[in-house]
Image 1 (cartoon, helix red, strand yellow):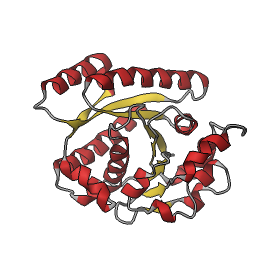
Image 2 (spheres, helix red, strand yellow):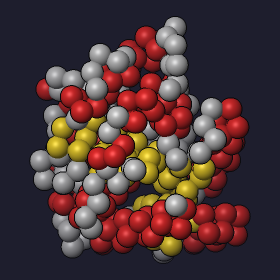
Image 3 (tube, one colour):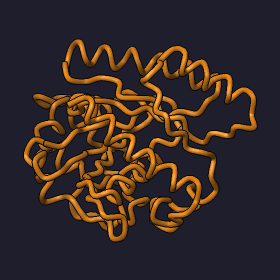
Length: 257
């Protein structure tokens, strides 16, 4: 059975999509079967996996409105070795269309149940807000991976997210837990980042992943080529760090089973 994880942070611009596609590519590289679900109407995880969001015949929008199954809507990332349930601007309309529907926050969970046997990991790229889309992701997930920069404002946003996870756990999804915090865009030369990193380890202990993703130009360049950084430049520091993170993720999941 697939382990389902949201990559979430209510703060924008912290590397959620970069984390999602590179973790997916890293997991695929070490032999895991992976499905990436793009829940952001911007469709960046779709484009970053080498799939043109403008040409999608079926997307996560159709799955949420139950006019298509995941098996019908998913596509294979051409070079990265994992499947993608893509998104485009249509998804923005789903927010409004879902409001009057029954089980509106459980739609994705029901759809994933049909394909759960086919994957080892399902990674859900959530939008940077607590919306019905994010709620669908959290209700279907076993856990949350939080990418964050080691900066002061990131700590403030983190406390909001932890409270959200607790509320969803209490009211909607008893399986949901915080899997871990991933430090991204890390520059060890900056004293503040080192200080925030230490604060995280003090507060969250083992919930902080050992792997640290460095600030890396090649990771930033990769989306413009429609590739995860792990595929675009496998020997770059960022790519090597994400493959290492994929291995740590597999090891951590084994301890949770």
